[in-house]
Image 1 (cartoon, rainbow, N blue to C red):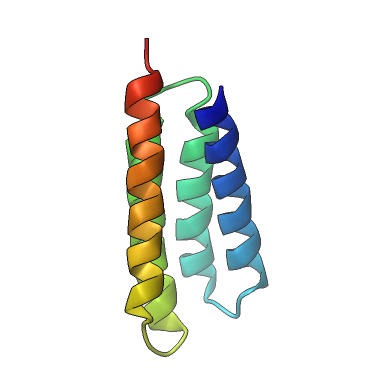
Image 2: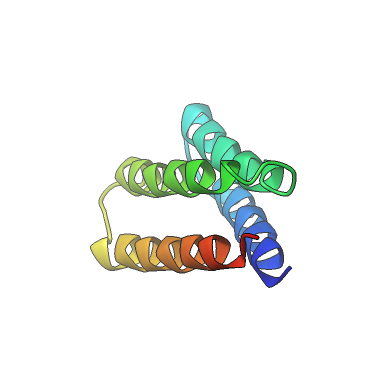
Length: 93
């Protein structure tokens, strides 16, 4: 239950961040697809790794589109994704 709550919170924050950033539409769509996959994980568990992978790719792309990359930010997102993936693996029946 806690992993679902954290996944939905993460998905919502990423969509909000992409919606408010000055990014091209395709970069926002990539973030929306990753977040949508996390939302679909409520019904289909296999969507969690896909959504986290898409959001990591979106983090890299969005950083590049915003004029440079902050590698510490990408490492934090990687760590958060690993934590969420670990919670998902250990909470599966």
